[in-house]
Length: 305
Image: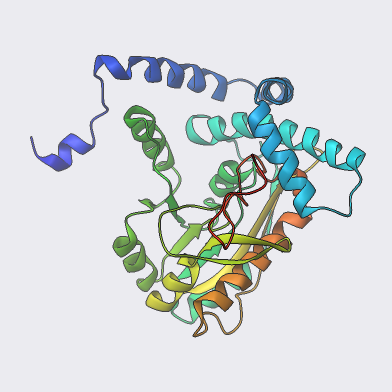
């Protein structure tokens, strides 16, 4: 058996059985009726807010830093709304991975496809940059109905979950690249492909610089600048949100002009300013639970102690 064939087989050792049981439970939830998923998602959101106190503390700190103009009552409401969105998002992730989407369920709209087509007409690849909204997975799957999309992602630590999720995403994406697979991702872009990428979170992997994000110095990846420079791809912001009636709105913005420039720091600041614009449109649906401002330019930890 070749190494390639081995890599396509699921890991089935005894140590993976608990994960497979959890995956089977997730598959079951993915096939619940959409109304029941909504009720379950809202209940799960309340449960997560009550039990994930460290994540809640991170989110409360981030919201206070990013929205100082809001009083405490409004910030607490945003926190509650975020956990509700997170609970709904869990069910949306499961449904996107393992569930069924009929032509009319869920309802959604897409604006701005002409901007993507215009970039492709120039012979360019396209980098779709978006933020880590709770609607991320379901909206990418919906967009795949209109566009062939490749994605970059952070691999799961669990081998079984990594195998199951990657296989699930293969049903609707053209190809998925891990964050370490830069060369094949660049090859995809040079061949005119569309690559989805979310550069808004802090990570210690890859080159990063400090640029403003909601007026706070934030360690941010220069990856968008680097990929655009090496591939010649256009960079288009991608916004998505969950509407009050349960439908989804997807919107592709025009390509960033004169991007990439010569300065990685300036380009990264532009990308983070764009991420902020996206987030401000639906801040309660953004994933605030990470320690986004943990590191400071002087190398010290801050805010979350």
